[in-house]
Image (tube, rainbow, N blue to C red):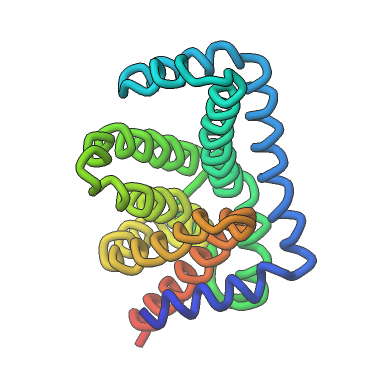
Length: 240
């Protein structure tokens, strides 16, 4: 647990440095712009999907009968917004993992782990494949657990899903440049509890308004610190 907290503390320290602040901003801007364009372009399609979902749970008929009409329209607009925000955050997480990680790794490794040799056990193809698996299983987890909302257990789904997504999405890229393929496999297998614990704590940030704007980069920094520290310790132990 101390390793997780240390990684989070170091990530918070790095988060507000000038070199990191731009990395905080641009993935979120790109994600928001992307979904804004898609939302405007395919507004009727998205509205139709939401209406089908509401109809499936018996809410659409209730909305249609609301008076005055502007209340129903306001609720529907709110539902669009509630869908838009998670999509932006998910997209920003993926963009950060795929495109912002190299800059963050150079910053963290150069200052805190300068003697750690780069073995390049991962690459772009592996990163893309890992991100695809993370997103597909994240969506599948949400869909598969929808019935749990009917019995109240569904309240835990967002936290479990966020923990899975963060640990799966960021752990690979955090150590891909420095660890060999064998070292990556060993670290993922031997320290599953640590990766999941860090995924859960960084995932909780996504549910805090305003603070969630920093969530993707905070998660990236925390996983880099955690992964590189574990790799450094593993190599030191093997030498000793």
